[in-house]
Amino acid sequence: MRLFVAVFPDAAVNAAVDAVLARALRAGPHGGRWRPVAASRRHVTLRFLADADPDVTVGALRHDLAGLPAPELTTAGAGVFGTALWLGVRAADPEAWTRLVAASGADPAEHVAHLTVARARGRAPEVPPGLAGYRGPGWTAGEVALVASGEPYRVVERFPLVGRSGGGEAVGPAR
Image (tube, rainbow, N blue to C red):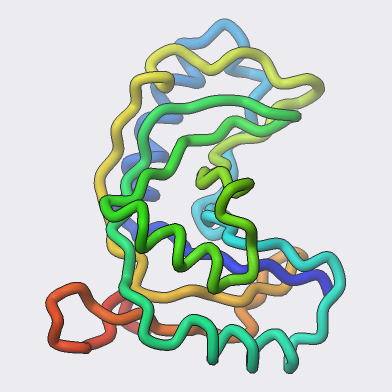
């Protein structure tokens, strides 16, 4: 099964992304070539697993992610690769983020944290005006999700992360 490990932005981040994309894609000379990614599909991939057994992966992630802190994240800057327009993702605590990426099974040295926000028809044009210097609202990623690729995405399992207050409470979106 094609799986990936990810964190999802919250509703406020998605609303801000929708608003900035509406302006930037309308203002840019290539705006008609970009198709925004639906908010329900926006995520920060920690690790992609081309073909994996969900049960084995859940067990490993449950063990490896246990007790890790919920990262404080923000979107900053933009770029293009392939047919994707992305916003950069920065962690308030880069060392904690590195531990989270490693616990997901990815190589932190090769990981580029980003949120894909649009796809181009054909080769991706340059970054639309106003996005290169974009700074979005912050959010706390209160959980990591193991997700099955497809239309729509299907969350296989959620792994709560620990709040930063020291109280040990789980933080993140209500279910």
